[in-house]
Length: 322
Image: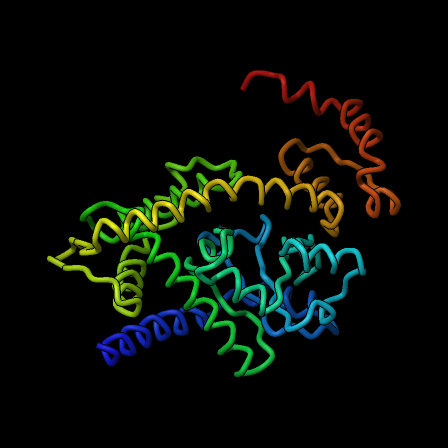
């Protein structure tokens, strides 16, 4: 039994490791190198919609994994906030090959990453994201790569376990994943539809998710039968009741956690004013000039920024019918 579990765990590790090292556009690597500068992170993970559907004109998504928060440039208040309620999020713009690339960058310590992909966490945000495809676009060395891979294996294990608990009594692998992502979206404050978005995450990657699901179930010792594409969990009613009770707690905790993060972001989102200005220009064509003071203190300058938008006709445009 242990040998079979070890083999399945090795399969999960192999699938994720081979995915991590797949190439990304050279612009991504150049952006990350420039963004890191003299900092000393363990690694940088690229994930999200820009990985699934490359769009250099949109916003890239990265997680920077550090051993200590002091390894990444930030003020004392920002580090304290990140220690209490991770992760902090920053907005970066950098010129790469004659064009401006933009990214949202989240900062996590390795210890936080491990905790937020473990079974005791009530927070679904990290493991639900990192059971999805990801690339390790920068790493400080093999030990750091192994440590980050270990967290990704934990994320997949958590996701697969909850997929069995929240999924159908029997079904295809994609049905278990769709059930999982519908529930994680429902537990968070997400603007995307909790029906359409989960299907889009799995669509086109069914083989990848199917291979990870069964390997993770075997590694976790979760019993199931397989008949062709159909998977039939053999967990008992008591196990499902315990898991559903656990999910109730996570669902109740999810939205308050996200509200708290949004509140924190109002004070710690480095570059947030530039990010908002870029979003406004992209969606409306209106240029919102920002003084250096407004960039550093967007909350203080918010009334003036809103007045500038009103004068530019932003709100009148929004009221016009499509």
